[in-house]
Image 1: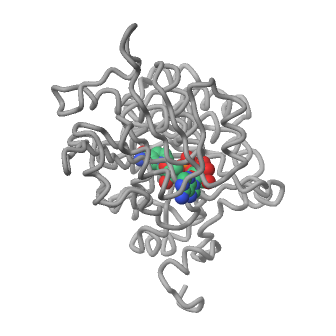
Image 2: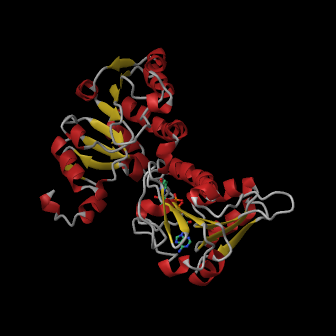
Image 3: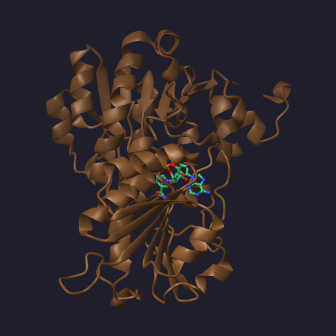
Length: 366
Ligand SMILES: NC(=O)c1ccc[n+]([C@@H]2O[C@H](COP(=O)([O-])OP(=O)(O)OC[C@H]3O[C@@H](n4cnc5c(N)ncnc54)[C@H](O)[C@@H]3O)[C@@H](O)[C@H]2O)c1
């Protein structure tokens, strides 16, 4: 199969869909890989690295789309790319169709086979191609939170680890899922006192078993949240209700109860956030302050660490890429139920019902 790796052109996206290791693996399996010149630069991979692994470098994005049976990338195609997608071409990437009717219509019109990373689903309901980005964001949340607790950037002036003779900072983590556990682990590693809340007792038992004693679990309810926000310096929002808007666990009136200069990192911002005052920010302008509480609400946190994020993403996508290239999409999806869940649009037909539901489309319109 001919596989193409275009350069991401979405604003501020420096990740790339395949590393030289991926090229090496595909070439070893007798496939041909075309990489757009400069595609990997933002993640620290250069043309010569791809060439050494066996790729052929093409100058333009148009050339890559025109020649490839399968496109492997990171973000959904943006408007400029819609016309480049070919009939019958496999496009394997994050799509998030439900958030863009224009993209959905364009991909229906293209008659391509759109396989979305975010809906590839294991039998236990976990989303293996989303998990690594939550891991990155959870760990980064503590790094960012620690930074914005510093006084020159309007924080409270607390060092999370404390020093001998001074108590450590206190971190409250809402949600003990992937983001929450990674955040708790980083905070605990810095020596902070950590409280982690969830409504899922299985998750709390797990956290209690694996974390050191200065990570304390409690059930998540309004009473406990109101109690803890008064005494914590950094709050991490890592709550998810699958397919729904995140619940507002911290309302605006609660901010007045918090320490001035306390920091909220609401990682769940991409699902609306679990804090009433959350609104999405960017890496250029990541924070704002309401009632003396610093809010960090960047919706694509992994984008700031493209080297790590690209490696983490491609580690999990590559086995599927190889399977698709070796078997073709029909046979690959027939033999792998997880991958089959990734099929969203096939040759002009929406095959993932949540997309039509998101737009209230009648089946016959599609
Ligand atoms: N901002 C970013 O760059 C970025 C990056 C990755 C993930 N995210 C987002 O982070 C959020 C968390 O992702 P995840 O992978 O950790 O999800 P997850 O499903 O692994 O964990 C979510 C946890 O929230 C818990 N929860 C649900 N209701 C709760 C409540 N009322 N109180 C406390 N906990 C509650 C669930 O029981 C679960 O354990 C998602 O919205 C995800 O999209 C954002």
